[in-house]
Length: 77
Image (tube, rainbow, N blue to C red):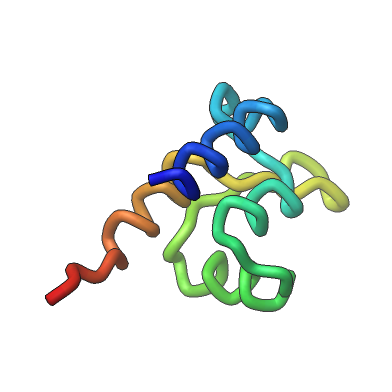
C-alpha cells in the first residue's frame, strides 16, 4: 500500500494526474519502463493512444495508458 501511495505522490508532483496528454518521458514513467523502444512498440501495436501535433512532438493519452495497465493486470492466486 505504501508503494502505491508513493507512486500517487510522485505522479501528483509531476502533475501527470491532471493532464489528458502526456510526454514520452511521462508515459515511460507511468508504465515503469526505461526504453522508448518499448513505448513505441505499444504505440505501434495500437495498445496505447497517441497524438502527433507536429513532426517532433509526440503525446500519449494518459487514460489509454491507465486502461492498458488495468487490462493487463494479473490477479494473484
